[in-house]
Length: 312
Ligand SMILES: CC(C)(COP(=O)(O)OP(=O)(O)OC[C@H]1O[C@@H](n2cnc3c(N)ncnc32)[C@H](O)[C@@H]1OP(=O)(O)O)[C@@H](O)C(=O)NCCC(=O)NCCS
Image (cartoon, rainbow, N blue to C red; front, side):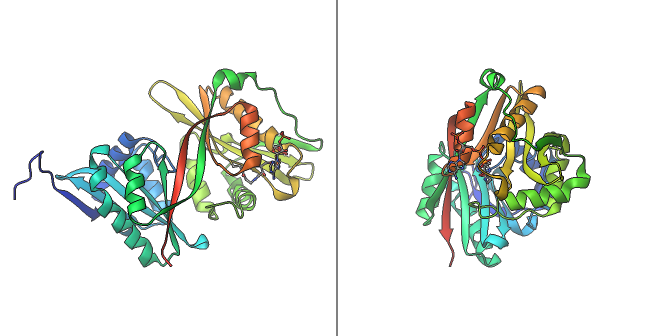
């Protein structure tokens, strides 16, 4: 049967490296979606896919509409926490045909032997929610997307660190192991956090505008790290947005105002770098973090809901 624009054909196939520039174009047109923003150039996307815990030709799938790419799914296996995260999206006109894409990704996760699959969906996307619910996924947690305008950020006063602690910049990628250790310790037991490898941390540090110059440590006189903040800049057509990418306080240093001080320091850094506003995502039930952000003047601008399908 001939396929016309009124009668398009939809196919799902495993990703092949020849699809890279088309996939990159799709991701750029989709913009920020699910739980993340993918790198903007095909080269950076290639590096990211090579570093992540996946084998792209087995773990990524492409949805085509009459031969044109219109959706993708990537499965990221986080075996230390027994789950696979599926990053999935398609153009709105293809939403009703994205089911087989999700099915291919879920099958892949099943073959990887994990206990559960997680998918993140922004609150604006009604059809994807229906698609996952129809397959038995249930909502397990919700993240808040927060935003702080430059004028509110500019009013913030510096928040001092408790005595004996001071800020310093990350020295260079020679401290990648330190950053890896700090991040893994700070987020241990945090919902959905899977330990990072030094290679993953390095790949993030190598991306434009999220390098060591955007990391601050708070440390004591002995050089013990008490807390850190890792920020990033994201360039959009007419503005530079700041992002608080990761931040936290080492468990033994919590509860004495350090969290608040590092967040303020990160915001000031982003302003000094020309950010027009500051964005971040936080797990809704993380009351200590939400308190810090609300006190700083962040407003909720959206939700990212996480859905789970148990596989065993
Ligand atoms: C969230 C976190 C950074 C807070 O650090 P902290 O140094 O303990 O925080 P502070 O001492 O600056 O306290 C910040 C606010 O949270 C409150 N708070 C502290 N611990 C809390 C808790 N367990 N539950 C509820 N509120 C809490 C404090 O009272 C304070 O509020 P106040 O200013 O109204 O008094 C720290 O708990 C952490 O690193 N958690 C794990 C990683 C993480 O969640 N990072 C943030 C992800 S976006």
